[in-house]
Length: 234
Image (cartoon, rainbow, N blue to C red; front, side, top):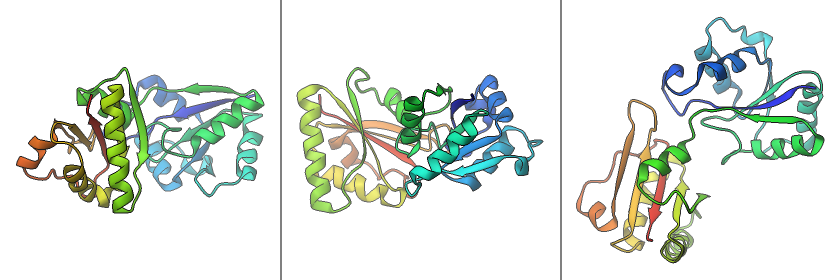
């Protein structure tokens, strides 16, 4: 019986040695079967791990929001005989991607599950924000429609103030600036906003300031770039 490894991926254009421990890279190098959110991305990542890896010798199983229970069962067919690695499009699997469902099934079936160390944009953004790391929530995507998004932001702000809770969000990169402007419009001046963009890459940008301070400056260069937004009103 094999082990289900939760494999970290890069967050962007970063050297492997910077964020992936050598021991983890060795496990990735020796894994033959991958349950992957994005096969093309995974192939490129494997070549960054080791250019000598024979990509055609690897097996890539589709793992995304459209995957079926049958796709998961196919993964477990391999897992009965050898190790399988789950890998997301970026960062650590199981957070804001469909890998969690496969991991839950693996536990129910009695397979060994091993998480491996690597970059997580959510945790890196949290520890760089200066906000509470004792009480925090990752809320994923906010509603798309303006009125609904505004109500959600105010609700999360109110909860943050009452519970001293850090609230974290992500957005589709091309809507980053729209979300930023809406935050300036609906959040209280004293509420703090932290933006972490391009974490671990050469374009890394991390800034924390109050809504009042953000309004006085220029909009950050976050258009079409992966970013984590955090607010704190505690």
